[in-house]
Image (spheres, rainbow, N blue to C red):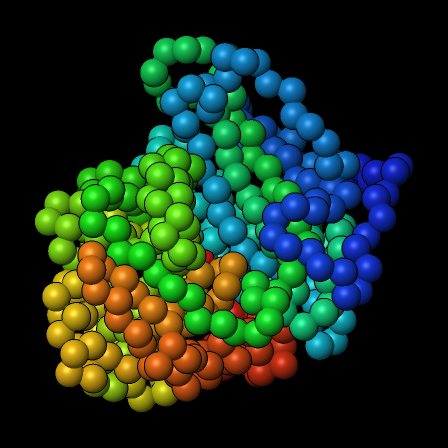
Length: 358
Ligand SMILES: *Cc1c(COP(=O)(O)O)cnc(C)c1O
């Protein structure tokens, strides 16, 4: 149990008005959570303080070798007006998976969840209430030693910042066009693809720019060795409905284990679908498309929840899926997951819809 000190801001900022477009990640709340790590002392001085700039040495290790990690989850205003989180224990577990890979000291799961709850509770009035909106929660850890040697840092900062965010789709759940990248790769097994860390994103920007230039909104990555098997989308996992079965790439070590992915697999199994976590080649997809077996395709991630895919482009072929429209399963999943998040749909699992106030 952390003993969290709270220092309230003396200059609260003006909160966005109802109906105001929020976008994503542009507005920040009045407070943030901070905790230090020092070798020999462990994690210490947990506190909620006014949102403010950091002061770091230009030699701080994070700037040079990228020793950092991040998480992403959302807080929602429940139907009862209280603040709720979606499966925060899963973010806590994944934090330590990432930390172990990057030689960052672990944070006890219950401390991570307590820290998220504490800062969300302080800024709960910042949770927007228009349909589809939420308070995006961004925990992250940076290496802070002032040292240019290549080694794990001996000091770190753990921070949590909060950002009121708009509905991902301003004009409703709209299918996106996706570019299957056959030149650049994101991750290989044995690398850091399964870890939630900035380095994966730095490596992905070039393909993202290329896809945008061609009129596609996201990149779908292929495996880094044969460039033949489907991995995942920029910040989402990917699902296909083929001949009635739900198919998604297996967690092979180069794919981020999404919490939305896990939630969708759980729901689909409980709804009686056969689910398959396995390798899927681009050739299999093209074939399924030709024979009409490819019924739906959607991405899953915290930001969009469910993102229907209307179009997939691979080299000279463009596959249009379900006539470019949202499929019924994508729709049902979106309604169910967002419903559980806000409390409009009863949580069938008991620990998915978690109140942020203790
Ligand atoms: C965060 C992330 C996801 C989605 O994970 P969720 O836990 O569902 O939000 C998928 N892929 C990558 C690369 C990510 O960083």
